[in-house]
Image (cartoon, rainbow, N blue to C red; front, side, top):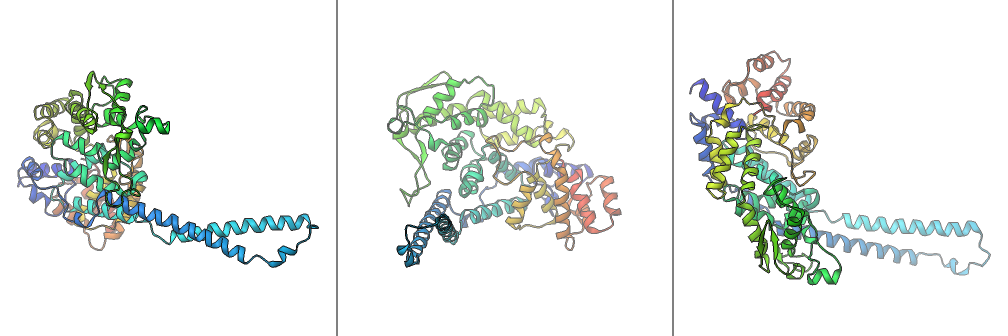
Length: 495
């Protein structure tokens, strides 16, 4: 393998994959583009996913635990009050009317203490039932991260990560479903047609809950009239602005309102009312605004969930959607300011193939424009951490430590601060590079006994590391320092 072929293999692993790992350059071979495309033809299923609950099951599990916690707390509080009544001194009945002010104050203080004691008993009783949401989240994080560590290249995993961030939900709001949502809606469709991905995402209970559509009802719907509640525009607005068309693409506030009316009734079954299917998607006609709606100049007369699906199909096929998604993909993988010719080719492929996402990805890696620029794009924290761990050959992680590190670096797993997801430009992450040094030092300390920095340079990177970094590693005062210098180098942080 020539030096230029090795360099292109390393670039392929950084720019489009999860970073070099032992044996990955050999897996890429002399045809990096062909290797990337070949990976897209392999199944995207997670071998360890069988042990994970579905999103609805996870939602029910947490809801059931919360219900038991509330019941235990009430029981404990009632029991504490009964004990307080039973232990009240009988002398209280013989108190005379000549009570002093201090006695009255003492009784008030005693009542306050009794209330505090009852509340403390209730809290302890509730805490005795553990929250299952956190363990579910951590197991999902472990399976997801180890899939990225084990991948030969990681191009397909990167695409899953991209679409998961594009269609983000937040574990801060719905922790139990965050990992299962990615598996069920994103991973299952990341290499299929965009319209199928869009329909799966927007009908997933995690998204409906995250963007408040479970609280939305038509003003003229049965529920809207009876409850004097109305429309929530969040879901419709984010679909148009973030998920499909992009900002300033011609839709109006009237379009948002009409689309929000179309989506009324898209909700999930409450777990308390349906212990077998709670947490699953359902269309509730009692919440749905009756009548047709006009969105982007087209009239939709359907009266059920098909009305929303029809609008989503048209949004998926809209020219603005193709341009918006092609630009985001190119920005994520190639450069903050992606080559216009690359974006144009990817947009054309999206439109010509009716949104075949695998073909759009193939068009990207097949274009010379995607390979010409130097590896200057700053990796997001999650990509950098996985790349660092991959280089050592480690394939298993402690999810508590891993998710804690991600939070420290500002990219907490499945916890973006807004529906637009985490940003993909250098300006948003450059100020946090200092915190990466802390993580690099900590990780280097953990692996210094089993990881040789020179072996990473020679074998994992096939010596495709800048001379300056090679020299710095060789002059380091300790193996830990050498590893930290290597992990913090542009060769690890840029793609």
